Image (cartoon, rainbow, N blue to C red; front, side, top):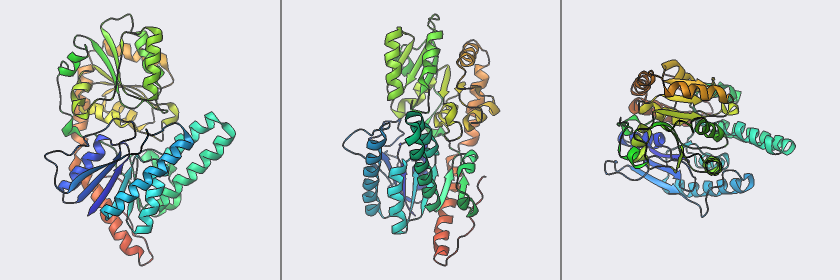
Length: 415
C-alpha cells in the first residue's frame, strides 16, 4: 500500500515504524512538523533506507505557538492545509495520523473522508481533556465552554476515523460508545526504537564533554510542557546542592526549560545543568551518562497521556525515578518490572526521599538490568508493524464492505 504517516512531533518510534513498513514492501511517506519544538527522531534520509521510504517536513513561516489558544488554532489549520497538498501529491491508499493537534488533524481528516482514503487515528493523548483542564484554570466560565467544544470536536474526529489505535487501554473509557460498538479500536502500546539505542558506557564522549564523569547524575530528557512540572526538578537540584558529587541534568527546551534557567540563575544552582535538545544520534550517550533517569507528569494528566520518554529510558539500562500518577501506564510498567521507583507527582518530599535513596542504593544495577530486559522482550518492531498491517488490512476491507452499507468486525484490540 501507499501510506502517508503523519507524526506531527517527529518522535523516534513513529519514524521507526514508517521505515519498517517500507522495508516490508509498502511505499511510505513520513511527515512531521519541523516548526514544532520537540525532541526529534532520525528524520534525515539514511543510506540504508529503502527507496520506497521518504520523509517530508511541514513548515510554516513562524515558530509553532503551543500556548496561545487563538494563534495556535490558526497555525494548526495552516499546517493542516499544507498536509492536504502533500496528500494530494502523494495520493496515498491510507493515512495514519499521530501526535497531531486537533485543528490540523480535523483538516486532514475531512480531506481523507472526501477523497476516500481510510484514516487511522493513532491516539497518543486524549488532547481535549488536557485542553479543557488548562483553559478552565485560565478562564473558568469561558474555559468550560471552550473545553466542551474541544471534547465534542475530538469525539467527532474519533467517530469519523476508520480505525483508532489507542496506546493504552486506559483510553477506552474516554472514547465515544458508537465507536466501541463498531469494534474499530485496537490497543497497541507505544515502544522505543531499541535497535537505535545501543548500550553505552557510563563514561563516554558526551559525559566527558559536559563534566559528568565522576559525578552522580540525575537526568531528565524530553519536553517540559503544561503536563510536566519543572518545579520538581528544581527542588531536586536545591536539595542536593550541598552534595558536590551530584548533578541534575535537564535536556529540554521551551517554557519549562526557560523557567528552570531563570530559577537556576536566581538561586545560584551550579549543580543544575540545562542543555537544549540533542541530536537523536547522540541520545545513547546522553542517556547513558545518567545514573538515574527522571520523568515527571502532572496528576491531572494521569489518564490522558503516557510519557514516551519512559520507554526510551528503559532501552538504555538505567534505573528510573518517576513522579507520575500511579494509575498511569508508564508507572505501572516500571513498578511491575522493578525498574525503578514511582512516587505521586504532588508529593515533593516523597520524591526527594526516593531520589536520596536511589543515589545511595546498591539496587540501581538490578533495576537497570530489568529495564533493558523488558525493552528487549517487548519492543520488537516487526511484531508491532504486523499489528499495524492488520489494522490497515481491516481498513481496506471495511471500505469495500462500506460500499455495501455495512461495517465489518475489526481485529482484536490486544495481542
